[in-house]
Length: 138
Picture (cartoon, one colour):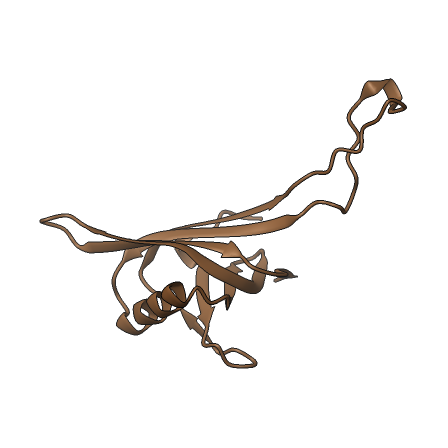
């Protein structure tokens, strides 16, 4: 895979409809997508050479997304605030060019606003997966 521009990673939120229409969350300058899975230790006294054994397929999977940027789109900002205060699991779509698309329900785990006296107002968001996240290769 050739190098990709970070600004081409898209973060979209669903409008709550079924099927959802997605709106791009504009103004993000930095984005991070983290995928993880907890492991289940199945080691016992009969484990070969006393090496740890892990139980395949038994762990809990999770996805986390974070981003930070500037205010550009009042409608997207209002939608994100609404979803945060309602603590509503909403459909999100994360598009990574030349790699794939992750889609599923996420909760807004953190929403931060900041600003310097002589600078622009900024915001940051953290999303936590709240159900099955699917992956589709591009």
